[in-house]
Image (tube, rainbow, N blue to C red):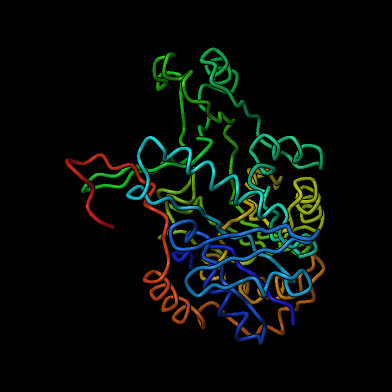
Length: 375
C-alpha cells in the first residue's frame, strides 16, 4: 500500500481531518510537521556511492524507510513551514539562518519523490502569482476584471477616473494587526481618488487596483484534478460581505451549484498552465449571467464549504490523494466519510500535536502597549 505524505504544521485542521479520513478509509497516511525544522527535527540528504538517501527525524517522525520512491504515492504539500527559534540564534545571524534553512528545504522538496503525485508541486506558490493567474486566465478564455498592478500614483489615479471614480483595492498579501481590543484585516475595499494617501506612501507599496464588477452572487469552486465542486455564495444577501464575502462568514449562506462544463474545463486548463492539480477558485457571477474569474488559491481551504454547502469535499479529497490521479474515481453516492464525523477526532489530534510539535509564531502585528500577551 502506498503512503500519502502530508506536509503541514500542528495548527492545521485540514491536515488532521484528511489524515483521519484516510485512516478510516484504510489508507496509509503520514503527517510530517514541517515546522519542527530546525528546532526539533533534522533533515539529511546523503549522496554516497552514486546513491541518494533522505532521512527526516523529529517527534513522531523517522522517515528514512518511508522515502523510497515506490512507497510514496501522493505528497500533499499542504502548509509546509520553517520556524527559527529566535532564542537560539543571535539577532545578527537570524536572517542568515532563516535563509539557509529555507534554501535547504526548497532543495530537499525539489528532489523528494519525483515520481509521486504532488498536490501541489513545491514551486506552486511562485507559479500561481497574481499576475501569472491573470495572464493565463485570459489565455484560456476566462473573463477577468480590468486590473492594474502598480505602485505608480499617476497610474492609480488615471485608472480610478477611467472606471467611474470608484474601484476595488486589494493587497498582494493579506496582513493583520491587533491591539488588546480589536483585530484588523486587509480585505477588499472600495476606493475613490479622494481616499488615496499621499503619493510618496502610495509608491512604497504595490497594490491591486481592479474595476468593480456587478454581482448577482459568487462562487467558490474547489477543483480536484478534472473534477469541479462548486458552491454558490449568497454574498449579496449579507450586510457586511457584499464586496468581500470573507467579512461576513457568520451570516453568509452557501448552497451546491452546478458549474457549467465549459467553465470547469477552463478552470482545469488554467491549472495545467499553472502546473497545479488542486485549487480553490473564486468567481463573480454577474446579473447577466457572465462568469468573472477573480483568483485561484493553490492551497485553499475547503472544509468550511462542506460545513455550509454540505458538499462531500473531505471524502472526495481523501480519494483524490489516496488514488493519486487527476482522473480519480469518485461518486457522490459512495461517500463514506463526512467532516462532521471526523471533526472531533481531528480536533483532539490538533490539541495533542500542539504539545509535541513547533507551531508557527503569530504573524499578526501587535500595536498595543508593551509586549503582546501570550497566544
